[in-house]
Length: 252
Image (tube, rainbow, N blue to C red; front, side, top):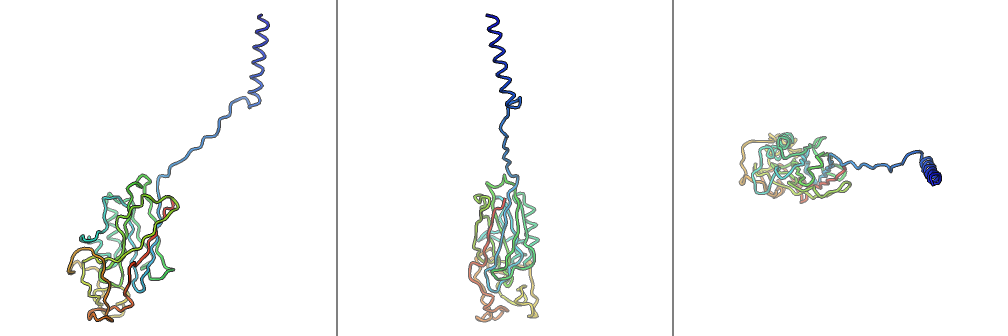
């Protein structure tokens, strides 16, 4: 009885040793796959000028949550927006955005004014925390250079639903900051249309003399060709809406 039990035990041990030997002497576990969650999300912002005779000032692009507002129809423009709409100054508006705790990222276009033409475009990128995507919004502003206080842009557009590799396109309207009367004169329009006029070509002026001191849709320019005696502009500086195409692509 004891010898029989001993023989069976040895046989089991030998069989186990053979199996372990075939497996290299230890069990092999499948490799572990680790999926890392990106810390940041990145968006590429592209602006194209659709007008025939209106250069656009370097854009100010802002990624933010609901606590920040770049502009709103029917509301008074900030001084920083006024400086952009009257003189094409991007830095003050960018500084205003950067000072807000509700702003995740700000970018300013480079390379000078964005001229009309399908081949011309201005591109900036915005990097935001991936944790902000649920409440992420986007705003942009750029001056219509041959105007008193005209600008184009978008305010508070949600970017929460754009997946990586996808893009959203927006056709942008023209707005009037409501801070300066639309005299279209060589003294008050700073753009290239008045370059050889001998006028003051004033940009920002802190005095607000418009009939309404709120942001509205821009009525367009009249021009001297159509009888506005103060105007230094011509029909070539007119435009139809939309004035620009904006593309926002998520690249990360």
